[in-house]
Length: 162
Image 1 (cartoon, rainbow, N blue to C red):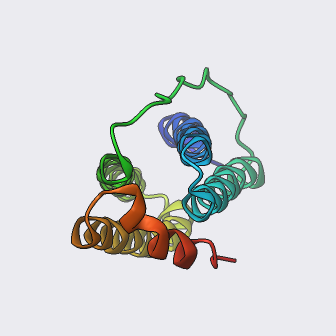
Image 2 (image 1 turned 30 degrees about the vertical axis):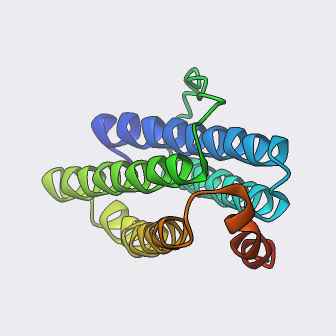
């Protein structure tokens, strides 16, 4: 059985993961409007991953006998100045999510919830990958020059994501 504090924290994380999916969906729409279909596809897949993360938390709460409390999802922004600005935000957002996951790990340790602590280790590892991918793309955008004509190669590369 989950402690009340752990249940509340995990429910907040469900909301945060859904917000992440919402944010990446908005970014996908932004890239679609710029005719950068590879960037748009990458973001769409990223949004799908975030929904899967939310589901993983959701299912875990239920498995542990907790109650699901769905919260309002904040509306994300829909316009950015450039692809580089989008990936600056993606990288910063992933760092923020990492901090959230770390706080959940700390809470699990504090309330001596070994099962939650163990489950959260998957997310700890996942966040290392998420930050790495966002950082790599940001570096590539900056290296190529954040100009639509220069981004076509990277757009093609990102469009290969499965």
